[in-house]
Amino acid sequence: MKKTVRPASPTAASPSPGWTFLTNHTHVLLCLFRNPDERLRDVALSVGITERMVQRIVAELAEAGYLQITKEGRRNHYRVNSRLKLRHPLEMHHSIGELLTTLSPSD
Image 1 (cartoon, helix red, strand yellow):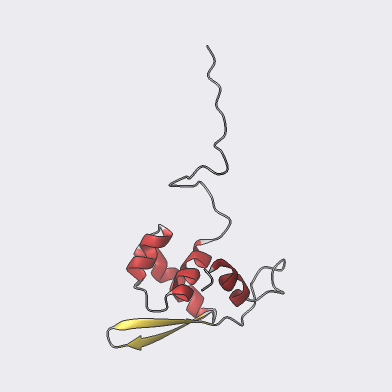
Image 2: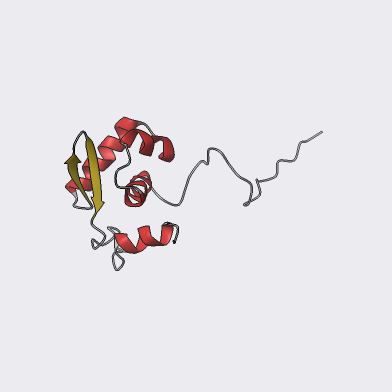
Protein backbone atom coordinates (compact mmCIF):
# COMPACT_ATOMS: atom_id res chain seq x y z
CA MET A 1 0.00 0.00 0.00
CA LYS A 2 1.36 3.40 -0.99
CA LYS A 3 1.66 5.90 1.86
CA THR A 4 0.42 9.43 1.16
CA VAL A 5 2.63 12.21 2.44
CA ARG A 6 0.88 15.48 3.10
CA PRO A 7 2.67 18.79 3.47
CA ALA A 8 2.72 20.30 6.91
CA SER A 9 0.09 22.86 7.71
CA PRO A 10 1.35 26.45 7.38
CA THR A 11 0.17 27.05 10.93
CA ALA A 12 1.97 24.03 12.34
CA ALA A 13 4.91 24.95 14.53
CA SER A 14 8.21 23.66 13.22
CA PRO A 15 11.10 23.51 15.71
CA SER A 16 13.71 23.51 12.94
CA PRO A 17 12.48 25.02 9.67
CA GLY A 18 14.40 24.22 6.50
CA TRP A 19 14.42 27.88 5.51
CA THR A 20 13.21 31.26 6.73
CA PHE A 21 12.35 34.55 5.08
CA LEU A 22 15.06 36.46 6.94
CA THR A 23 18.81 35.86 7.04
CA ASN A 24 20.94 35.20 10.10
CA HIS A 25 22.32 38.74 9.67
CA THR A 26 18.79 40.10 10.10
CA HIS A 27 18.12 37.85 13.08
CA VAL A 28 21.34 38.92 14.84
CA LEU A 29 20.69 42.60 14.12
CA LEU A 30 17.10 42.26 15.36
CA CYS A 31 18.27 40.70 18.64
CA LEU A 32 20.76 43.52 19.22
CA PHE A 33 18.20 46.16 18.19
CA ARG A 34 15.76 44.82 20.78
CA ASN A 35 18.40 44.37 23.49
CA PRO A 36 21.60 46.39 22.87
CA ASP A 37 23.34 44.86 25.89
CA GLU A 38 22.62 41.21 25.04
CA ARG A 39 25.56 38.81 25.19
CA LEU A 40 26.51 37.23 21.88
CA ARG A 41 26.15 33.82 23.51
CA ASP A 42 22.48 34.60 24.12
CA VAL A 43 22.05 35.96 20.59
CA ALA A 44 23.46 32.68 19.26
CA LEU A 45 20.93 30.70 21.30
CA SER A 46 18.04 32.88 20.09
CA VAL A 47 19.05 32.69 16.43
CA GLY A 48 20.05 29.03 16.54
CA ILE A 49 23.62 29.42 15.29
CA THR A 50 27.04 29.19 16.92
CA GLU A 51 28.52 32.00 18.97
CA ARG A 52 31.45 32.11 16.56
CA MET A 53 29.06 32.70 13.64
CA VAL A 54 27.35 35.49 15.59
CA GLN A 55 30.76 37.09 16.21
CA ARG A 56 31.49 36.94 12.47
CA ILE A 57 28.10 38.45 11.58
CA VAL A 58 28.53 41.23 14.17
CA ALA A 59 31.97 42.03 12.73
CA GLU A 60 30.50 42.19 9.21
CA LEU A 61 27.61 44.40 10.34
CA ALA A 62 30.00 46.72 12.20
CA GLU A 63 32.34 46.91 9.19
CA ALA A 64 29.41 47.83 6.93
CA GLY A 65 28.31 50.55 9.38
CA TYR A 66 25.05 48.95 10.48
CA LEU A 67 26.27 48.34 14.01
CA GLN A 68 28.38 50.38 16.40
CA ILE A 69 30.05 48.56 19.29
CA THR A 70 31.12 50.32 22.48
CA LYS A 71 32.73 48.74 25.50
CA GLU A 72 30.96 49.38 28.82
CA GLY A 73 32.99 47.81 31.58
CA ARG A 74 33.41 44.16 30.70
CA ARG A 75 30.41 44.10 28.38
CA ASN A 76 29.72 45.37 24.89
CA HIS A 77 26.88 47.71 24.02
CA TYR A 78 25.52 47.61 20.46
CA ARG A 79 23.84 50.47 18.63
CA VAL A 80 22.13 49.92 15.28
CA ASN A 81 22.47 52.65 12.66
CA SER A 82 18.77 52.67 11.76
CA ARG A 83 19.18 55.22 8.97
CA LEU A 84 21.22 52.97 6.67
CA LYS A 85 19.39 51.55 3.68
CA LEU A 86 18.83 47.87 3.01
CA ARG A 87 21.43 46.47 0.65
CA HIS A 88 19.46 44.63 -2.04
CA PRO A 89 18.22 46.69 -5.02
CA LEU A 90 14.63 45.50 -4.44
CA GLU A 91 14.59 46.95 -0.90
CA MET A 92 17.17 49.75 -0.98
CA HIS A 93 14.46 52.42 -0.77
CA HIS A 94 13.81 51.27 2.83
CA SER A 95 16.03 51.69 5.89
CA ILE A 96 17.14 48.93 8.22
CA GLY A 97 15.32 50.83 10.98
CA GLU A 98 12.00 50.42 9.16
CA LEU A 99 12.49 46.67 8.97
CA LEU A 100 13.64 46.26 12.57
CA THR A 101 10.84 48.45 13.91
CA THR A 102 8.28 46.44 11.96
CA LEU A 103 9.65 43.18 13.37
CA SER A 104 9.85 44.42 16.96
CA PRO A 105 6.95 44.21 19.37
CA SER A 106 5.24 47.54 19.96
CA ASP A 107 4.93 48.84 23.51
